[in-house]
Image (tube, rainbow, N blue to C red; front, side, top):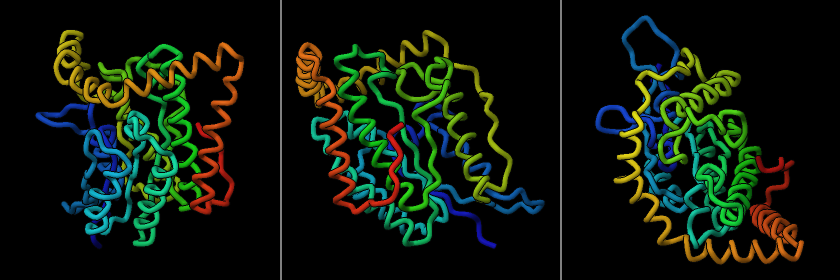
Length: 289
């Protein structure tokens, strides 16, 4: 019997940023992989795990770069967790993102892979941005989540509601940048994903431990990360997004002053509906988490 093949596609979350091991990252997908295969007495590799996720990736990168590599591996299980970086770009287009996700999901499931997907918290809230800056990002993330919900149901994916729960407000779950989980947070994602896969008979091994293996980074180490790699991460995104985000914030403030903020929500909902209509997603669509 050949090993179960698990391939992970996505961005820095799946790459494992926030969960350092040695000179690299580990992350929730690697932790999950260890609990997928049946525990055998023979020294046989039960799971073949390949992590194709790359920090900074958007839905376009998953479609054009990661998907071909994933299909070549012919996975039994493929996780596709992506979308936050799309919301942090001035080129954000929910219809284009939906079309790319539809193509990715379709290609993987047509080859026989089981999909594992997740909706994600909005980055503005996690970063603690002021309301006028946070609300436009939240609106974008809700749109992405709505699309992921609908397509996950359409393709029979195992779907994790990672945008909700008390763990989001637990500071111990998050790394210094407040956007990526720390080891405890990555373990939380792995544990919850394992439980969902076990319900479908797709996780035969023991669930990952929710308790960290390594001590949490010291405050000085966290500050050093923010002053070096973290600052660069923020700067790269601000160069692209900040001018448009300030425009969106000004629009937000104008609508609030006029009492017409609901129009912005309606506009976003209409964009999601138009995107899903283009893809002919006609099944029940849950509200965005």
